[in-house]
Amino acid sequence: MAHSRNKYADFEGLRERAVALRREGLSRRQIRDRLHVDNNDILNRLLEGEPPPEWTKRPNAKDDVRERARELRLQGWTYDRIQVELGCSKSSISLWVRDLPRPERRKRTREEASAIAKRGWEATLRLREEERQRTKQVATREVAQMTDRELFLVGVGLYWAEGAKDKSYSRRERLQFINSDPDVITLYMRWLDVLGVVPERVRFRVSIHESANVAEAEGFWASLVGVDTAAFQTPTLKKHNPKTKRKNTSDTYRGCLVISVLKSADLYRRMEGAWYGIVGAASAADLANRA
Image (cartoon, rainbow, N blue to C red):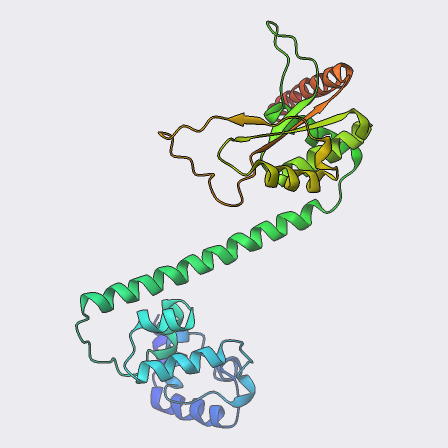
């Protein structure tokens, strides 16, 4: 410690040398090495008030944002307002404008405070939505392509979740699937292709509330699966209950599409067997990981 104090005893003389080197265009690292100053606090004091040479200033994508933040601060804006306006963090704003005088604080009205809070929350929601979409896009790209085997296994899981199943008290060994999501229906139809089901064996029926536009719904589903509406079986109409507060009452409500496959007992058994194979393989992998 005594050696360290002696080293910086002639502080003013050391500062003159440091300033001279700075004005010659040396960087902080070069000055530190030249003067053997290994203490950053001391180095900061030696160079206090001396701007860095131009060549040490690295291009920064936030330069424009920083300059705008300084302009707004000089106009008396608060950190909250600058954050909402520029979409940057308060920590960055604080770093950029800390050398500027603090604006006089005026007490906000309730309306102003509410408006600022609303804009701040909207900015937060926007950033969250952008992150949400980025995550989805990355996951979508990770899937890329699927083999028929992969599609078969996905379809088995999908059917077991949404399709009609055989019970010991009610034998229903046939493929019958119902869903209201067009993407799910599209995937299921592709799964039937993998199973080798020809179009002649497939039957379609709409299940929908009686208060909805049945013809329009049949037209939508027929277009999606690539058949004529004349091929559709008689729709299943659900009676409307005025006491039930339904949310699916918009113009986009098209009920559910029921897809049945004729003579599909063998395919059903194959699907069920594959499902239990998936469960067994997953359990075996879990045990292996624990071992």
